[in-house]
Amino acid sequence: MNSLGERIKQFRKRKKMTLAEVAGDRLTKGMLSLIENGKAQPSMESLRYIAERVGVDVSDLLDDGDIEELRTLLMEIEEQYKSIFHPYEPKAKAKLVRMREKILRKKEELQGKKYEEIRLLDYFTRIDAILNGEQEELTMFDVIGFYEKIHAYSRMIDCYAFLSGLAYTRNDYKIALQFMQDAEQKIQPYRHLIDFMAMLDLHYLLTVLYTAVDDPVNTQKHLELALEIAHKHKIYYRMDDFYRFTLIQAIGQGDKEKSSYYLMKLTQHADFTEDKMAISTLAFANAHFANIIEKDYKKVPGFSKYLILDGLAEEEVIDFALLFHMEEAYAYWALDEFKKSLEISESFTIPPYVHHPLDLSIMYRSFAVRALCFYETGNRDAAKSEILFAYHGVTEFPNSIYKKFVQEAYEKIQYGKRVK
Image (cartoon, rainbow, N blue to C red):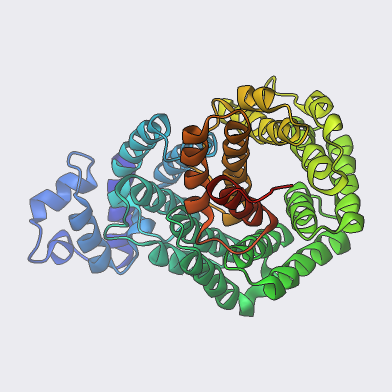
């Protein structure tokens, strides 16, 4: 407080103004004297008034200790926010509430002038949107404007990605895509100033979203742009995401040569990084390839060796195990081991954080497999219940081999048509 008062006094004297002149008609001379001598704390409204009177920004009146305090808070918030895997789950929301309260205590001091202030406003806006489903007085577009003023162009992409993610979680794929198209247009003048990893994020999200709206031309365009950046600059960031995505695309098209190539790239990436998540991805990738391309169903259970789940977050363990077991259940169905398939798939559920039509289609296919197993074991009521869930689930999705499988299973169970 003393430092703040001293800085106000310094700026007043530089302007050669008296206490009465700075106090004007909004403060008393006595109150301003108390503030300068550290005996009173001005409100943010009063601080803005004083700053205006002496011709400086409020941030100029806030001392270095205030910036250090904001920096410490920012580091704490960043660490906590990054630790949240699925923000819409109850435990995560409780954590976000506590984070919001911490930022709220300093919110009046956040003017959007300095990087630390903008980042905290950024987090506050994100948290509000997640907790309340809306952005309040300050919107993400205000934050984007702040970042643009301090030339933090990569952060602008991240803000658009957040807005896109909000729409994506509501399955509003076209709106989600529009936000990333807006980002691409907004940063166009600054492309040469943006780091390559931010550009990879941009192209990755555009690739995923163009797939969601069934636009294969633009999907391929942004996929190639991303891979070009990565190879040219020898960047391995997001490579496992791109390889996995391209593998699923190739498998979906029945392209054995291309899917074999990207399965090899995924394997090389996992070997190179020795990352548990990358290795665990191979369980699903190899099983999916064996089921759809090779049709060598007996190989599938053996790929469980890639599931290295020790040390992963609980949510990651659930994801990797679920995807692999879905492929395992498919393999046992294809081998006519219907009871084994049902045993494995007994606890299958679609996680609430899965939203992409392709991912959902793969998961709904697993319920079609369950339906077929029930059908073959004589439980026709259970078969109809499962297949209706899967059939209605994929109705609005773009055409794919997974959607086709569900539809054919529906026809078999409802009308006796043959599947396989």
